[in-house]
Image 1 (cartoon, rainbow, N blue to C red):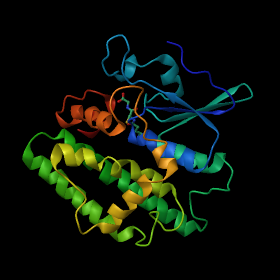
Image 2: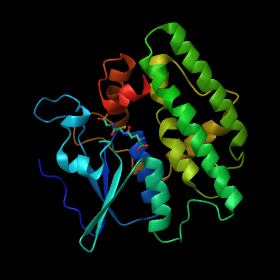
Image 3: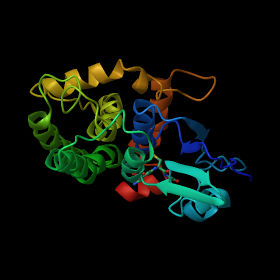
Image 4: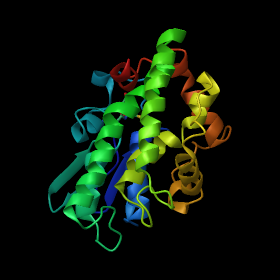
Amino acid sequence: MAGPVIKEKLLFVSSWFCPFAQRTWLALNEKRVDYEYYEMSLKDPTTNQWYQLGEKPKWFLDLNPLGKVPVLAYKEGDETHCVYESLICNEFLEEYSPKEQPLLPDHPVAKAKSRIIIDSFSSKFVPLFYRILLRQDKESQKEAAEGMLAELRQLEQKIDPEGPFFQGKQMTLVDCALLPWFLRMSILQHYRNFAIPEDCPHLVRWTQDMEQLPAVKETQKAPEGGSSYDEQLLFHYQRYADASAKSTSARDFK
Ligand SMILES: N[C@@H](CCC(=O)N[C@@H](CS)C(=O)NCC(=O)O)C(=O)O
């Protein structure tokens, strides 16, 4: 199967439902990078089953040997450059694109603080999100939910109470890295009756404010035809909620 042609213009290889890809999509939009979107199907078109790692198209594994979206790729002279792993893609964009729209604060300590929030969220919150869905017995679902409540309460202490962004007046890589999972809270609500608790009002306000931004709305597009983005997203996560998901990502968080 032939893949996309890599040109000088930045190519963004994404899958519409993927929160990791959405992290990079948000940064691309907010920084107003000139990029081309390529929708990567993580299902084998011949069997309609989710690909296992070795089965993914060669062109895709050549760009990212981990076989995951997002990927950024472009040509410079004869050389093809590719960058993958959402957080690394976002840091790359900070260097690659003009500085008019910085997504990290200037001061080295403030920068480090942003990275600490992102790092902690990625290693603790993100796995808990999937565990709440993937775990099938009530007791371990409850355990994961309690872990997430503790994480939410810690984030509530860190968010700027005035907003509108997580760290105040400007969008940063913290918004890009965290927001995709907050935009998916309705999935936990639907399948596990889990919601952001009332003692985290700033996180609720932040999510609602972010949902109104054009740079965010642009990343919430369902594939052509069928039902709404929210309905298709809910359907996509059903395989996590009933533990039938066999994809590489589902295995990563079990
Ligand atoms: N650590 C990676 C995770 C990316 C990831 O898991 N992407 C999923 C889609 S949401 C993927 O491509 N999975 C491949 C598969 O399941 O076959 C990142 O931050 O970019």
